[in-house]
Image 1: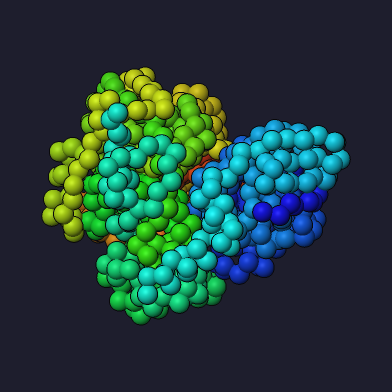
Image 2 (image 1 turned 180 degrees about the horizontal axis):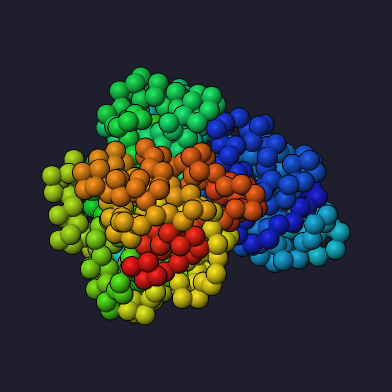
Length: 167
Length: 420
Ligand code: SF4
């Protein structure tokens, strides 16, 4: 995977899927419309402030709650390049991998990074560098199977290959 | 080394002798579920695959329950995508408005989930079916799309936490109180990525309705699935209902657990979870004076027959507090009809409650009871996140049907004993 460099927006623990994309907007699945309300209930100004290539940093259990894939989709469509968290809730974790939103479980980084910091994520080295504070943090590498999914471009691309092999 | 029931079911569906926690497997699924929020995305992705037919039209179930009866034009369009896909694919189990129910009340009632099965649903509360001894877990829309095409899904085998409940339940304490108490104890990520296995004499004493309530909220502790042993009561529930033959799996005596916890239920009072996390629980005796504007009794957590009976036993002959709106939503059409027959609906209406056709409605802040800024609700639902039932500055307190009904009468969060 390519390194990712961007400016961070910081959130707390247990950011749930209702905060990421409130259910009142779920009568659509259009990613751009979802992006307009991304993180709105956690920080009403976020949709206006986020720029393409920015990074979300959060505490433990990011994405807890609903199975709605609209959550990672909204984040991706808002232009967010990656999410770093101390830990992720499991359905959010699998959804993000399935749709190809890069996520990194990195408790040290989640604790050390502050809003506005510029960071460099190097997935292959398992390292996150905080360029603003001049600190580096280790992260938990993705299991090989999930790297394979990511490299294939998400679950559907992976399945498409399998389905084709079958016929 | 022995295996847990969760490991056995996963191994069987992956065609393996044994699996262990952490292992990544590809497993055959027995049933895949989608709703009017998650299925439209899945259908779009399914179509992009270029696959013509779902793997088995009797094993893909679609239920429009979240924003139905359609709350606005956009949700009507979403529901239409489901309906058309169901017709085109000849799905055997598509449930239209008027015949449907909240998915996690409906599927077990319809006999669509068996012990020992592996069920996925693009809805986080799919874990409800663990009450029947199935491995059931929530996934995303992309997973559903892939599963509809292939009949398979990838999993990481979870570790298991064993939760043992002993002692005798106090009056007015039910499955909801046990699970809220447990989440209060281990936290909203206390079982993250894990299986929660519920056992013990107090669990054996619970009805299936109480077990569904508990399994339903396993996800609220971050769990992948919650699972119950299959016993006489389970078999009784399945009699005349089960649509497929099934096989029962049990944990080995030497199965490996990440953790074992025990609870003496005779010490557990009715519980209330304060905003904005299900782990913020307090016993009813420590709640204090909290005036409320609305009470919702329903949802896939507590919208079943037993819940309505408990609520009716408190509301019978009483009136809802003048400053409170009480909304009662039976989980399925059958539950609705049964409640009518038992006279519960009349009790609710005479008490001054609004009774609605089955829908998720207010549970997710969809429609049918949205909260305004600063309003407070007691709900028998499963989540009290910021903005869950409406305005980001409204509040939801989670409780079982007894506390909810008593609160509706008192106009503040109240113990059932205060009105009975
Ligand atoms: S009742 Fe609530 S929790 Fe249950 S499926 Fe519907 S929205 Fe989800």
